[in-house]
Image (cartoon, rainbow, N blue to C red; front, side, top):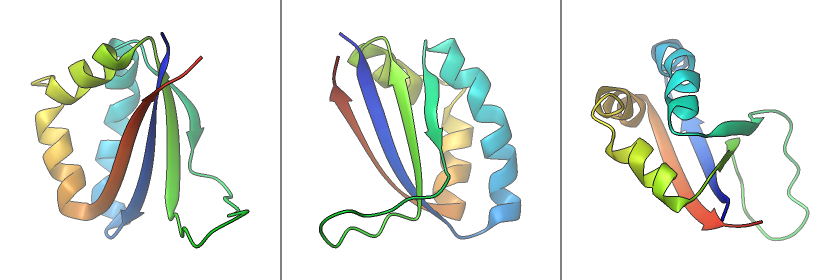
Length: 95
């Protein structure tokens, strides 16, 4: 079953974030994922959620998302992201 990862980022150092942003497409594809949304205009239609930068991915399944997060190649990039951005992420099964 397809799975989706929804990420909300507040990038605090855009210059330091650029290498992460450039490296991720290869890792996302490595685990069968694809970008559906990568930033762009965002409009809250209901509630008080205040997303900063939304990214939406589609993966073949939840295991593929976990494999990305566990990939040793991803670990230094994850550390970089965590040092320059506040991140909220959720994975959900879908259609």
